[in-house]
Image (cartoon, rainbow, N blue to C red; front, top):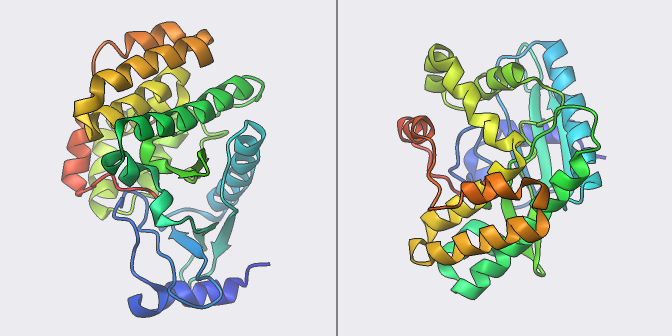
Length: 281
């Protein structure tokens, strides 16, 4: 059982004690892995945002449900715990404690460095997780989504391991999720400016709830990382859609008639916030 008092002390400690951030993704938080101590084999993710006690309770329940549903739908996860931790403020703070994965296993850096054949094998592994999730999720009796981007996968023994469980894409309506995206953004600017662009912020999530768009998004990321292999990735995506996701093949193939691009408003947000798209470890 996790020692929440020790976890709180670790989070409040200085950078040298708790360890430097191991990702600069930065939209929701900067995960860190302690260099020593009882949490040295864990990645700690702290989500600071103004939320009422009832909202936090709902968030914790949704996260537990989401981890369960992901697992039931064939998604391999590292050991993942969600806690509401007392850090001395007026409300508790959501914290995820997750089994640390070797940095050498993260898919995004490997996609940038490995051979064409190796990158295609990794895409196949990630694609099989996407297909399994959406096939099984059709039986889930609530709104549920999935964000299987390249930066949210690791590859271990040829299998894709997914490690991004926040926000929990289950139970929340589209409008509620849009507000959640602002509520827990690490960037104060996003929390201040975002409400004036709530409609656009809300739209960020739409790909995560669309089976064909999650596949298109995976291929689009690969094309941007390795443009020299774009035609190979597009052909892989079209063949995969037909063989593994026939129910959604037509719209997926339509989205793969050329290298998919990120929506302009999202690239604008990323530049504004200084986000680099690094692995969300």
